[in-house]
Every structure is written in structure tokens, then in C-alpha cells.
Length: 118
Image 1: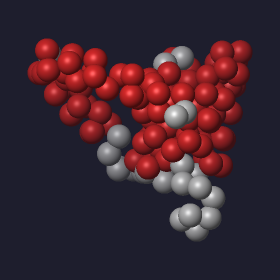
Image 2 (image 1 turned 90 degrees about the vertical axis):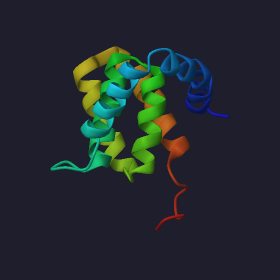
Image 3 (image 1 turned 180 degrees about the horizontal axis):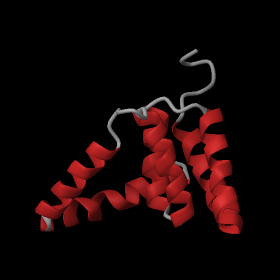
């Protein structure tokens, strides 16, 4: 299992428990999440790549895992993700040399294998 998949699995039970303990706040966050990442002028795949870059800058492994998975699921290409991660490097410098590769590895773990969807 990859690091990103491990992070998602590690967060599953405590997130479910906290969501049950504070359902209204979590429901509100869920609505915000869905609205912010829905297709609009920017396609959802681009929004997920943006979220992935922000996760790198915020140094959040959980956010990296979830948004890498979502970016792959929404059809972000390796070229889009790599180029966007270069913006994280520009804007965040040294720490992006650690969290950018984590995001790249997570994306590649969830992305379809080359040739699968060609």
C-alpha cells in the first residue's frame, strides 16, 4: 500500500467518528467542498489539481492523499499535475521539494496505468 493510501486508511475511522460527533459542521463542510470542486468555468479536474497544489503548500499529507486521488479520478493528466506542482515549487520553495514529490507519488498511485484509458 502506498503512503497516500495508508494516510486515507488511517484517517477513515477517526474522520467518521468526528463527523458523527459534529454532524452539522461536517455537513456544512461537505456542501462547501462539493460546491467549490464542482464543474464550472473551471473543470473539476483543474480544481482538484489546484487543491493538490494548495495541499503541498499547506504541507498536509491527508489533503495531498485525498486531492491526488480526486485529481486522478477526475481525469487530471500527469502533465497537468507536474506543471501545477512546479507552481507550488515556485511559490513555496524548499518545502515544496518535499511535499511536491509526495503529491506526485500520490497522484501516480491513483492515476490509471499508462495505456489503460488511451
